[in-house]
Image (cartoon, rainbow, N blue to C red):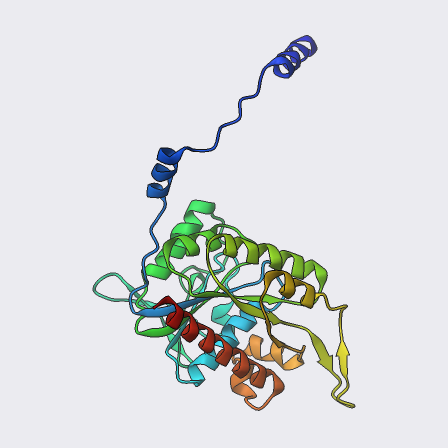
Length: 296
């Protein structure tokens, strides 16, 4: 057995390894035909993706509070939970009913706080979702194109961590208006966020800006602002040529509101947290309006 292995290794070492050359023009055209075409989502004017790259930085909290804030600003808004394996939008939006299906076999998203909501968490029983990539991409397409979204001004899409199947499926199947990046000020989180931003840049999707979450904490006794990490955010936004839209502090009410299913922006509309999200919402609206004016 050992002698056979040695012979195989010698043959492998002496053989030439042929690398596949880059595709020629004809091959590139055939490959392009096999990719799905980006088709507008019926009844939806703009699709905004909330992406973090790294998990645990408050991405879903950002997506939920942005959605309800945009709704309170007079926009018709929906939120799609793109996290197939760990959906948390139903909890944070206090939605639990199974979507109805119309005569065209299209799902009708339930509505709460004036926002249409759709999530895999509304369609499967409790328990883990153990699927391979093709099933995940098929589920995203079903949630995205098999739901009655319109009429919507903005569809907010909450994405899972990383740069995997969900992100690729979204960018391939529908035109995305922009990416809202979310990160804490730690270098570990910022580095993963940068990779996600570069992925979307390579897919020709514009970056709206970055929300720096868990940026600091304010003492409830002396109101002193305490920074929690050495801030490396400026270096990242300079590299990406984008702006920090807002710096969001850590507040204990965020966890309480998330667990109870009431977005903090609605429960405490005069808080610094809510004011920050109204600022983010207006900047997102301005970005989308400027983009449409430029595209004309």
